[in-house]
Image: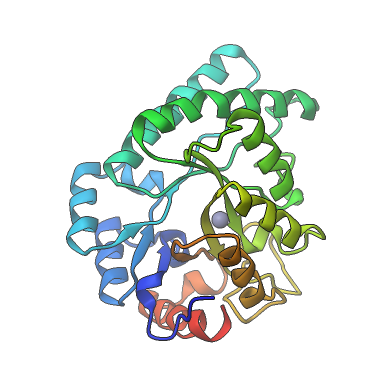
Length: 283
Ligand code: ZN
């Protein structure tokens, strides 16, 4: 496993970690100044700015865009709604290409409004990924399917384990052309009894396109916005990174912390300082 001592260039900050409290151009400068090698911006930040200007600024700092967050949910109640969701994702993929993102992060969605048809939602998701895989190839930006913790299966993602994501990848892209893979997020997958086996399987087809770290707090108070700083929770992060790197992942380690009552209330410079300390010591 790579050492992260003195290697912040191997580490990336997802802008959500700083709570989206400052304009994106300020955040980009801040992350670069702190010495990190990468950044993962969000669409709502980029789409309200000038994507080409943002891309220039990121490039001028030499930052790698470790992921572009994130897809519009795929399932919809009507076919027109589904088509609109695909179109929105295609537009975002074109922006991801301008940003030279290493991956377009896919949080695929789950049950449409008033639906209990989880199987139908998963069928829409598989169809949508198939369509977007073609766009990804055209744009030169891989899709990274991010399995979400099963507590989100109703609203955010009906893909909930790495094994499930890999099965979709194999089905749509049996020859592993490099444009359909997964994002491994410690917060979502740490609990999975098949975790190491699934990461090994992901490595065989070189599917791991992103690696996100934070921690799972034993007394989690909010299922979305109470992620912990690395080292403050129960995840064996170093063992997880070792497995991911054994599986061939050689990209950056991205910190992604949603924390409305703690880290989003702290000074952004302090948050980055603590990330910089914890990455080599805990991850
Ligand atoms: Zn993530």
